[in-house]
Image 1 (tube, rainbow, N blue to C red):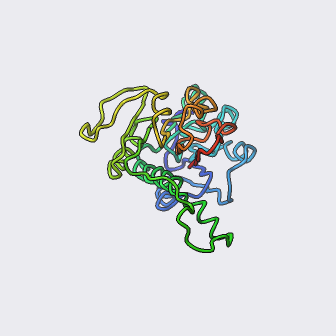
Image 2: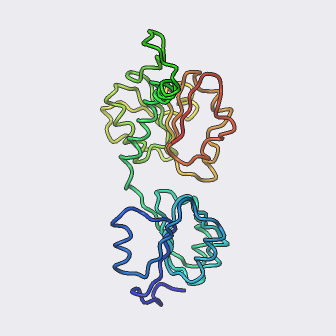
Image 3: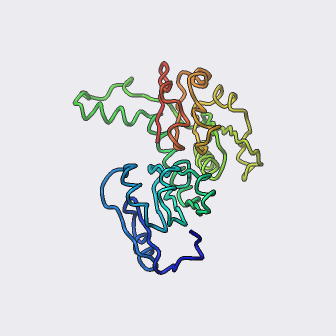
Length: 264
């Protein structure tokens, strides 16, 4: 079905999970909206059942909108992903049907950079461990060698994927006087050359960095970008932060020696 063949006011839109307002209210102003209010990810069977007569689908990154779901949605003209990425959608199958696929780039750039730096700090200063240690009743008093962690200021931060989020993280590192190494397949000049950001290979970043932060989309090229071989290149005290998609790291290999690795 073509978008031009539909009365917009009568479009049926299915939302796989309730999203924050005013999102639903804005949709209600223009379309016939059905919102799934059940907690947790939607099942494949539920997707198939609810996709049959809808014109628009607003889905989450956890919803697998594959070729089977797209084939079942005979009236579908638009898929809107509530995420920056779109690896959960079979874009090729949608394109073949003439279905528009959209996402939400840019809305969480600064927020994700904040979170990545928060994870970096928490891992370095051993905040989750210390919290668990205290809650378990193991803390009996201050000790000069207890939960020391590692300093962040003046250390080397390696950023793999130097798009908007990667650059936002690099700007935060400036406040901690960190040396920043970055890699991106599309090499561009840093926005702020005075900050001293330096281009490097992935191998160079892994070998030299005290902290490595991943900011790449999940594609066939980046799936398991970091695995056993890459982890072996890193310092034993290095910290790996992944706020991109989980499968960018081969999680079967994400524990080695004393390295501390946190995934967002």
